[in-house]
Image 1 (tube, rainbow over the protein chains, first blue to last red):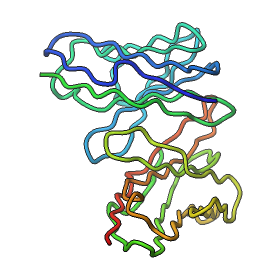
Image 2 (spheres, each protein chain N blue to C red):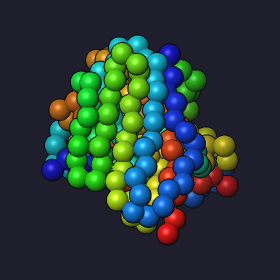
Image 3 (tube, rainbow over the protein chains, first blue to last red):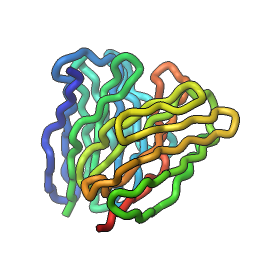
Image 4 (tube, helix red, strand yellow):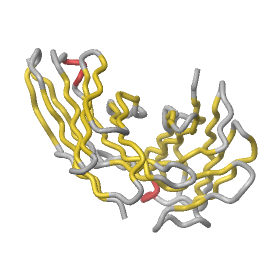
Amino acid sequence: GAVVSQHPSWVICKSGTSVKIECRSLDFQATTMFWYRQFPKQSLMLMATSNEGSKATYEQGVEKDKFLINHASLTLSTLTVTSAHPEDSSFYICSASRDREQFFGPGTRLTVL
Amino acid sequence: GQNIDQPTEMTATEGAIVQINCTYQTSGFNGLFWYQQHAGEAPTFLSYNVLDGLEEKGRFSSFLSRSKGYSYLLLKELQMKDSASYLCAVRVQTGANNLFFGTGTRLTVIP
C-alpha cells in the first residue's frame, strides 16, 4: 500500500497559460500532502503543505497567488501554476503523509515555452 | 531556519563501501530520512532514524547522532545501479511533520 500518483507526468505549455497538476493517494487517505519543486541537479524544495479542507501553508518565498493549491478531498490535492513563465519550468513532486511518513508521487515535469 | 549539508558529489568503485555524510541544524528535530533518487524520478525511501544509533537494512545502513546533528548513509557491496542522488531529509516537529531536504549527494559508481 501507500501509492501516490501524479497527473500529468509531463506537460509543455505556452508562457502565460495555467497548468494544473493532480496528486492522488490511491490506497490511503491523506489529510496532509506536500508539494515540492526540484530544479535540475538540485534537491527538493518544499513549496507548500496542503491540508484537506483548509488553506495551504506556503513556504517563504513561494507566491500563493501564483501556485494555487486545493486539497478538496482526502485523496486529492491539486497544484495550479498560474500564468506560467519559462522560469517555472521544473520537476514538481507531491507527497502524501501517512503514519508520519511521506510517500512520493512520480513527479510532473513542466516545461514552459 | 533549517540547514542541511551533504557533499555534492562522490565517486566509488563497484563492490566497495561508501559513506555519505549529512550534518544538520534544525529547530524541532523529529527524525531523519535518507532517500535515493535516480535522474528524472521521484525519491524512494531508504531509511529512517529518530533515535541515536545504527539502523541496518540489507546493503544500506544509516547512523544518527542527535547531539552532533550528524547522520551518515553507508552503502556496502556497491553495484552500478547504486549510481544515483542520495538525499538526506530532516523532519521538523510541526503539526504537518514537514520534511526539509539537503542538497543531495550525487554518487557515481565506477567499474
